[in-house]
Image 1: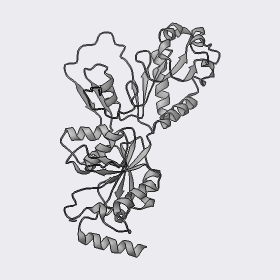
Image 2 (image 1 turned 180 degrees about the vertical axis):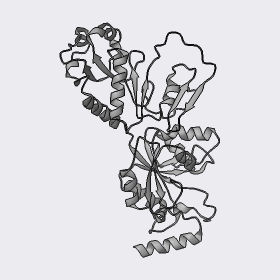
Image 3 (image 1 turned 90 degrees about the horizontal axis):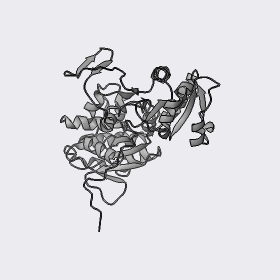
Image 4 (image 1 turned 120 degrees about the vertical axis):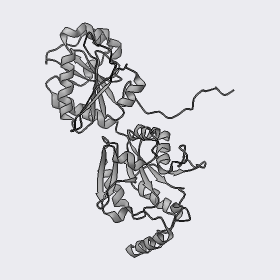
Length: 370
């Protein structure tokens, strides 16, 4: 008899305790930890970083009014009521490449252990939390390993160790940890639209001797991307993704791809842009910026980016769902109002072909270019 399950078994984001990529720092006082985070974050300013800490204030009045103070240069100060909740924190930290955690207060999935002789008791108290030490930091060159650490972890001295003043080396190590978790890219060709103006499925149009959807898929596969068709109803073909967000057009197709694999970045390519070629695909991949929500092309003469020639990072998924919750299903609107890497190209490369007349003109141009 099949086991009864109450909820749909969805693919989940590979989260740590509080974020998709986090590290706790423990073993010394909170000031030393926060100072180290400040120095390292200044070296890694090209990433979006966060610091998760606890307040040391003793007497705090309940916030009856939540305050959001915005500065015109992009800074915001927030004072509000709230409790630590791993599900809420994962949403709050979804846009960050790396989250530093004060390990004196909260337990991180991965750890940096700072050896501080005066905090030996603190480390002993948290010994069981030290299950994934990434590297060790000594306050001074002659700081000794605690005996209980060597008993619990016999190979601890084999773990890479730095001194607290080696900020460049520490920053580089963390840079490598961030790079290790950058999402791989998969391809998504959008097919099966209504094609009302064309009068037939635009993905089946023949510009190059075969259906355009196959040409688009080939462009993505030429860059070694595992590529899928986004369709209304998938067959048993494992290279198709059914639309789970019905009647939302391309927006629904993108969200359906993320539902299938929320840990991948998705290179979305429409089937009605036949002038996109290998060079455009390579250009977008070359300029991909995983620290941003997406990397998108924009025609030099266009006002807005093209949402259907875009690499969407995993952090785009929760933002898309937030727009849907507000009643919007336009991927371009999300991109316009988000932090996006823009790659400018000539307008002709991103011409949408929507009518039979445009198809005949485009086909003739393509034949002349051969």
